[in-house]
Length: 77
Image 1: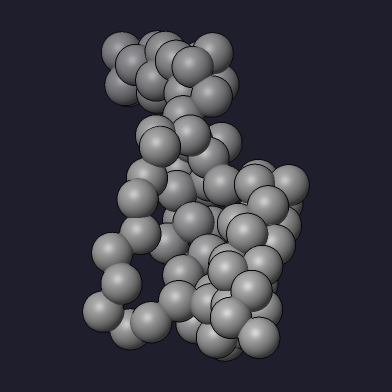
Image 2: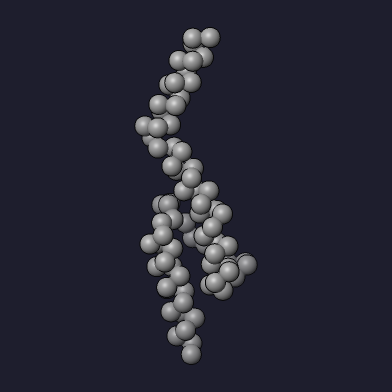
């Protein structure tokens, strides 16, 4: 039993040290919120392929993308 407890503690420490849970949260947020939000705002089509730069989606990055796409849409008028 003690070996299992030791391995669980080791695993928990590893996850905390390398911020794995934060990474998973960022990935889940990107998958769940980024694309649907752009579609809702009319800034992304259903068949559009979104590029991933390998970094998490922050509120600032999302706002920049929305502003960029809004500018592109309004420049046609």
